[in-house]
Length: 468
Ligand code: SAH
Ligand code: SF4
Ligand code: F3S
Image 1: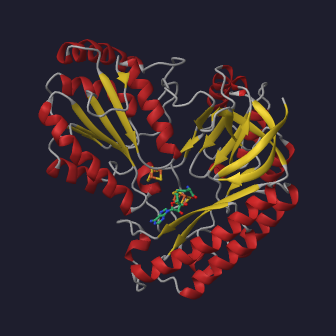
Image 2 (image 1 turned 90 degrees about the vertical axis):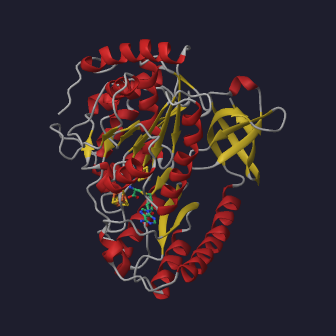
């Protein structure tokens, strides 16, 4: 178990390395070294990258978005679908030239894809200009790894999975108003199609004290929206010494003083309780949005996916959510073409989305992931046929999405104004659901919550401020 006693900063044994990196990098490059972190995949990765950037800054790097000018380039990767992996290889390939121009630059690959031994082996053999590969854990050792490479040491492949949750590392957040707050890492669910449990390891919850401290820090720093992150936030608390569940954690976050909004993702329907829905209903600080992936509307497929809920249980939960929180925005993830799925199964998915009427869907064609149980199942339906089903799903959801938009026009909601819109004098912000709203207003409203009446829709909601 890692136990960092410092409030924030690097673990003591890494601090010396960080100082040496700062001095050596300056000497080698002849200027303040710059680092570019390129992130693929989900919000967990975005949040991990913010923590990696914090460590890079602590080593004296300045951040840049320009790979060409960076002395340290890191790809934080995603393995969830094949397409995600292909994109990463393309990106790594392009760094070859950068390294040819200056072999002293460091190229690194980390994250979910890098955690897979087969990927690390491929990089080792086919991408000799990659200096460092590490997985989803161990990033607090970056100073040591970078120092060793700068000092002439060999390429490093660090795939160790550690027990516990490193706390109190520095964070360089991407935004100033809306921020991520990881509450747990890993996943124990082993849905049969999914690579995440293999690359992210077992579920580990952060202590409520660590989470609440970080939330307070964010609010004190001016953040107005905090999204609590985990692969399955509903099982938060499992394995902790304290007796706490996710609903209670939410209550405690909401009890922090200040004007801010709380979001969370992702919820798993098997662990989503009525208690949780009641907490959302009773706490105005919690956004009126539930992202509840159903994956398939067919019980037969849900069983093969090892999702451990039924269509009926899912619909019952949704009915309760709508009854308790009538203005809720509902979103979900869905997979088309799981091995052995028939058109009849798929038709059940279509009927479920017609019944629930989601605001939006994240839709995926099944992608076999080596090492997962589903990848070994017979998969007789052609990619082309799955493509047709997928298009049918998109068309169905498009109609429902538009109807939902129309239904919300005329209503009023609390928008977090977070910037200027493209039109002169117009501002842009996020609704308590999932939408963006634009309205006329003074720039001084940026960073504040404003009551907006939604009057129309044109790519985003159009509205007018009714109260300040
Ligand atoms: N932990 C979250 C989501 C993790 S991955 C959850 O359980 O809902 C995000 C989404 O990617 C999943 O919800 C699923 O819809 C999709 N996904 C995961 N593995 C996939 C695969 N092998 N093929 C296609 N889509 C996949
Ligand atoms: Fe993957 Fe299932 Fe875990 Fe989500 S809950 S990360 S889909 S195994
Ligand atoms: Fe991808 Fe890893 Fe997230 S596989 S979806 S980046 S947890």
